[in-house]
Amino acid sequence: MSIAMGLGMAILGPLVRWGFSAAGWSAVFDHTDARAMVMATEMAVAMAGWMWFRRHSRGSIVEMTLAMYLPFVVLLPPYWAGVVSGGALMGIGHGVMLLAMAALVYRRRHEHTAHAAAPSSPMPHSSR
Image 1 (tube, rainbow, N blue to C red):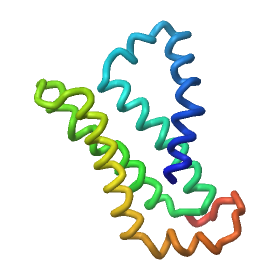
Image 2: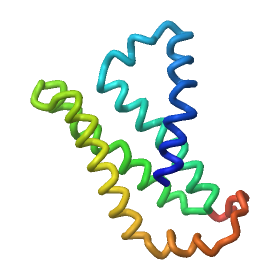
Image 3: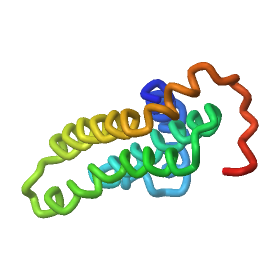
């Protein structure tokens, strides 16, 4: 999943920046809080796509996606209040995000280990 997240930032990042720039919104990236949420979205889209491809349940995908946003959402009010710097927002947010994701993988380890031996068919289950 970490590789998918990195690819999401590497591939979607330039496309998103180009889109914002083309729309005249490039100033959005001057704000650390907006950059953090855009980056979380780039990572979440790629990670959710990979989890869907690996036939994870919708619940697992939603939980993992929330684990990617929640640390940043919790840190935004202290950032806006000037208690947390932009660097701390990004650093702590990413660290807590990875810990939260690891906890969810452990919690649903049966689902994550079962997929290692499953065929790599991208066809989703109709019951999900």
